[in-house]
Length: 108
Image (cartoon, rainbow, N blue to C red):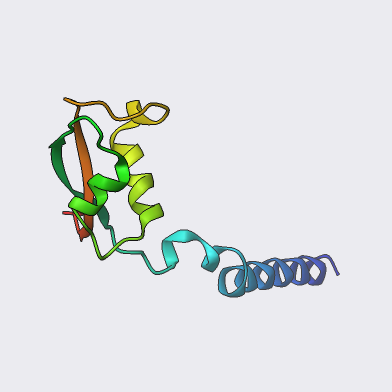
């Protein structure tokens, strides 16, 4: 009777482990999923020196970009020039203007 009881417990344990390996949490682990390609987004940037009377809108109109919207370009502008977030443009500032984005794969 003891042998039958141990055989049933072993059978249940092996069955539970087999089901967990095939349909449980282990196949859902990250190392079994499709890996996403490693990409890094870089911006093309142009260095500009401002003159008196320049605004962000006039600089964007002088150097247009058809690939991104005004809001995207403005957020990229403030990420490149965080010191200009709460001040006006004055003459003689050297700032960076974002142009179109290009995606490069840098995962070697």
